[in-house]
Amino acid sequence: MRIFAALLGRELRALVHSPIAGVVFTLFLALTGLNFYLILSAFTRSQTPITLVEAFFNTTIFWYSFLAIFPLLTMRLYAEEFRQGTFEMLQTAPVRDWQIVLSKFLGAYLFAVALWLPTILYFAIYAWITREQAAPALGSYWGSYALIALMAAFFVSIGCFASALTRNQIVAAILAYVMIAFVFYIGLLGFTMTNLAPPLRAFVNYLSSAEHMYEFNRGLLNTKPVVFYLSLAFLLQFLTHAVLQARRWLR
Amino acid sequence: MIEAERLTKRYAGFTAVQDLSFAVGRGEIAGFLGPNGAGKSSTMRMLACYLPPTAGRARVAGFDVFSQSLEVRRRVGYLPESTPLYPDMRVGEYLEYRAAIRGLGRSQTRQRIAAVLDQCQLADVERRIIGQLSKGYRQRVGIADALLHEPELLILDEPTIGLDPTQIRQMRDLIRGLAGKHTVLLSTHILPEVEATCTRVLILHRGRIAAQGTPAEVVAQSRVANEITVELDAGDEATALLERIEGVLSVQKVPGPEAPWRRFALHLQPGADPRAAVHALAVEKRWGLRELSRRTPSLEDVFVRLVHSEDSTATP
Ligand SMILES: Nc1ncnc2c1ncn2[C@@H]1O[C@H](COP(=O)(O)OP(=O)(O)OP(=O)(O)O)[C@@H](O)[C@H]1O
Ligand SMILES: [Mg+2]
Image 1 (cartoon, each protein chain N blue to C red):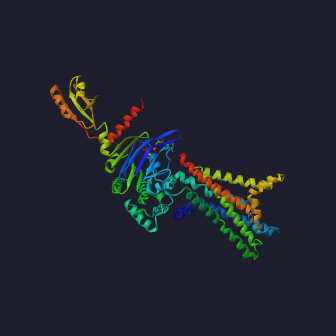
Image 2: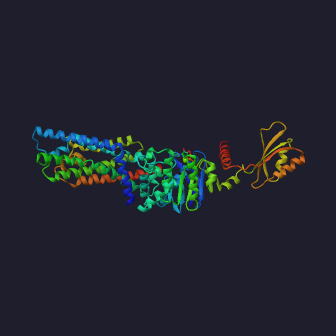
């Protein structure tokens, strides 16, 4: 446990100390702030049936800022250590590969989730100023943030996997971005193609992050996306571990 | 402490280490020598559990480096050739982190860090960022890290590279001080260093052992040690007569000296010393004799000869 804590501590401080963290954090605050501002100004111009929370987690800006952070946060995880040679120090220390895999995942995951904490403030400030809730029920908040946490587990895992494949951070980022975009855009097919066969539509909706969000931020929690994201995250961590094992033989 | 049996490492089609068998006993300081590309680093990486052997096996402290790698890694302190370190960490922080991932307790960590900072003379850079240290200091951080958990076996790949002369001397003293309690396997290209510190030498060439033993044994086994040089003013019959002397294996003419003088290199059976017989022969045949010498070769001479002669036999 102490070993794992030390590994995780190292991951977190490496993330926080890297220039990427600052860039991601600033970009993220700017985009979510802009998102919030645009929604508020739309709300003041016209009456809409949807709530602020529903709007906030469904705009294009939200999805872009959400998806774009994962490749940035995860690209250096393995690739940088391969390039620096520090992975040799890690793998010759009495540390198991799964401890490395989990500490790297958890470090990036905690950071990715922590980024969303300030957005709670947006809604709190809104409620404080307008004396009106941003969502009709607490379930809306819960659902939205729970889904963010679930999706983050999956997308961070994609990033970990991509980073373990290469010693080049840029390649890792591109790979992660392609994989994330692929999954996300398949999920959008349900919205864009109106004439999908019903079983295909069910499948596409099952994968669809946008569809999941549409339900969750109305407080309609359901276990299918939970299983979907967690099982894929688990699978990807398993694959990452397998990649590390295979790399021993390819050196 | 180390037992390697037919250890082999093949990189995509290229064999870097082939059928390497050797043993290093507990408490020994073994020097790994060999020209560039001989396979030293590859072997050390296998012993440190970084590279899985392609064939053969190796045991460290009785544990197999492949199937019981965690047990081996607990007992080994390893300094890779390039000394990879996290550039964003401070020296003290880095050592704390390394102590933690090796499972050292808190008080033990504090005590060991103080000890290695002192041993490697790093106390004054403890709060500096590793990325801003000079090469030699980084090297010392790598060595301090390898010593941190008082490992039974230290594997140091070119530990003195980049160190200044006083530091090299200090490192030599440090390594000598480890003898008996710890086992050390170090690779280096500085041969006098090996003669000064090592109780055992392994010379590697093209992935195979070319010679091994104590430095004195390696020198004694070598052809260079069993050679005398004679310079005579003698006729053509000299070669045949010299060859007949007991203990002489072969006689080789060495070009060089001006006319009537001739220079010969006599290769001897190990242990033979026929200098007196050569002198007696010269007196008997009334040859002029102006040199009769036997050199005590250094390890460097032996090394150069081994590597060179194997090269010439390898290329027909
Ligand atoms: N990852 C690798 N892939 C392919 N070949 C490699 C790899 N690592 C080393 N080699 C080759 O294996 C051979 C042995 O390399 P190694 O690094 O073990 O030599 P060395 O004895 O440590 O040399 P040096 O004195 O230069 O450090 C070299 O010919 C090298 O090119
Ligand atoms: Mg080397």
